[in-house]
Length: 217
Image (cartoon, rainbow, N blue to C red):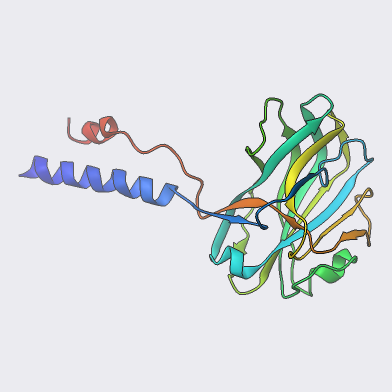
């Protein structure tokens, strides 16, 4: 009887491990109508970029664990390394971006969720999801406001362009500048960044039954 209880407990732990290790993925930014090189345009001296996703698309409260962009194509020879790379997330009540970076924060507090470097690797195919942020600091999305994302980098080397899918109309817009400390930039009104956002914890392989058996050897 004791052996059966331990086995049952082990199975419960294994299943719990799978449950809590699996995040919830949301695809946002529209269907995608063309490729665009911002914010990953290495021939620019630097970049400050903002995009936004609407609450109705996200529809999920919780910790943002990962953000991926949908790859379109290269121009030139990959890989590309981006240094001084930073990702910022912020709640915002705005439904459309303006050309002013600070204004788009909408008096909310921005959170730096990743700071370091980013490499866009060689070998990507059209439609691949590329991780542009695996959060090292916690941003808890409230599922009431819209979500603003800002990307900053200070230098890059590699392919001439790295294009990712965007939606051309009907979205909150995209904002960019070739200066990492810019206060205003070029607004691409109506555009949306096609992305996949993981809430919770990033999925991992299921716990093996062999590990469960070890509980009662």
